[in-house]
Image 1 (cartoon, rainbow, N blue to C red):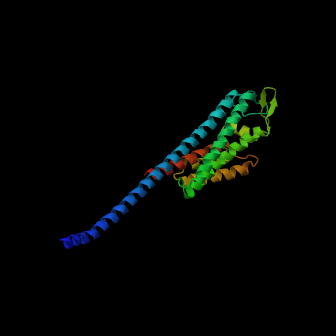
Image 2: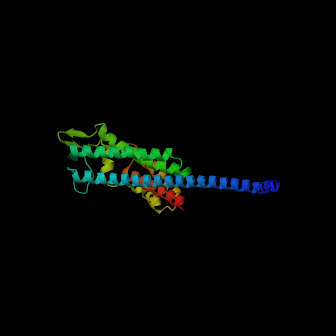
Image 3: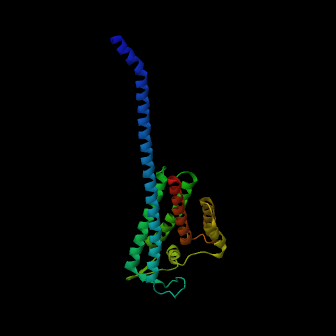
Length: 241
């Protein structure tokens, strides 16, 4: 009787071991899969937050430009800023501080894209870094005009002389010379992110050839942010499937 009992155990043991091993492997796979899905959800959430932040920063720069232009004095209606343009000093300084804060936040977004290799990969990551980098450096140059005291302070007003090259570019109407009209059209008509980026690079290079004293142009900076946001949204769409 006892011998038969042990024989039954011996017969059942391989199946028991097999079931135990298979069950353990399945539990391990399930746990790994849950971890992967959790990490993927966290990455997608982080990507969406970066897109939202970059979009807010882009809109904030446009709002600052509008508010400053609405307070500018000493310029003929519908004409470019001359050396006689002036504005309330406290108001202008506050807006420049806001622009400086935006520039620092943009730098943080770029660093997040650079450090978090799980968010964007390959050529797309490189393009996003270049696009955000252009805008971040452009805003830095605009703020530097103010920080380096190129603005003329007279009592409670600030005057914007010709030495304020970058501030004036920021405040002027969109810079789109006829020499670059075809390239700007290519950006808007391009089908792929790669085509849009190649058109942007050509615009950036030609802009330096036209006038090298500018550290960048707001019209190009705006295009860069739009391109970066589109790239990031495309990446999210592909991840979500």
